[in-house]
Structure formats: structure tokens, C-alpha cells
Length: 203
Image 1 (cartoon, rainbow, N blue to C red):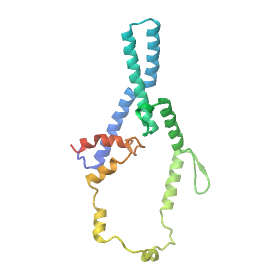
Image 2 (cartoon, helix red, strand yellow):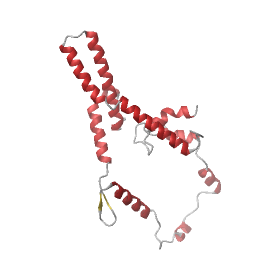
Image 3 (cartoon, helix red, strand yellow):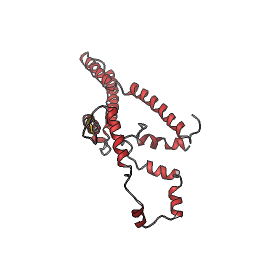
Image 4 (tube, one colour):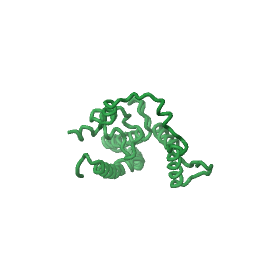
């Protein structure tokens, strides 16, 4: 992967990691619902046939493991982080996850001319145009008189300290203040991924 301090290499490494995790997730969790239905039917057959209690107990244990996987899957998707262990409820997590998805989904935008944009590519251009215009200074605006009225509070020494590179401790402190299962960043990883693997990077 090359030099770990090269951001391009780190980004590529994270992309490869995400690809492998997605593949693993499909194998481990992608078919949980299907496996649960199959296991429920299997237990019904065992009970109806009068199977040995140890066999039924083993099947029940396997189903409980699947239920736990399903619950953890929906817990992460629901972004709930204030419930206690005894408060877990898969259906509630499921509903919260669907609510988050509906709330966060943008289906249409209105541009400055009042036209409605619903095609993703058109919506993207509308957003880019809006913020580019918002943060572009108007050609008739002269900021010099306003700047002349402001008092300079940052001296050269303070400016040097503010402009220096972030320290490892500053990055670590900021990282561990983020909720572990809050919305992931552009790379798709939640803060928990970096928190759990922080020591590996610095080992």
C-alpha cells in the first residue's frame, strides 16, 4: 500500500477494506432474515416430530444467535445509542432505521429559477450552483472599508500556532468524542471503525 502517511494510499486502503467488509457483511448478515425463517420452520418440524430435547435446544440456540445478529444489524442502522441492553427491540430499531432513511432522502429540489429538479444529476448540479453562488463575493462588494473597522486580535505567534499541523492527540481527542454509530463519513466508515482500530495504526 506504500507510505501510510500518503493520503492517496490511505484512501485506497480504506476502499479495499470497505469492499472486503461489504462482501463479508453479505455472507454473514445479508441472509439473516432468510436464515431466521428457515430456522423457525426447522424448529417447528423438530417439535412436531418429538425430536430429542438436546437437538431442539441446539436449534433454539442457533436461532437466538441469528436473532442477535439481526438486532445488532438494525441497531446500527437505526443510529440509536441511548437504549440499555434490556431495552433492545428489533422491530423498533427497524422502524427507526426506515424513518431515518425517509427523512434523509432528498427526492426533489427547486433551483433559483423555480424549476423543480428530480433527476439525481440535475439535483447535484443545482446544489453545486447554489453554494457556489452563495460563497462567491458579488462584483460590486468592496470589503476593504469593513475590514478596516475590525480590530486585529490574532498576532503572528498565535497565527503560527493556529496554522501548524494537527497533533496526534488533537486528532485522537476529536475522534473519540464522536458517537460511535453516528452517520458515517464519505468513506462509509462510522467513527467506531476508527476508534476500535486506532491502536493498530499507532502500534
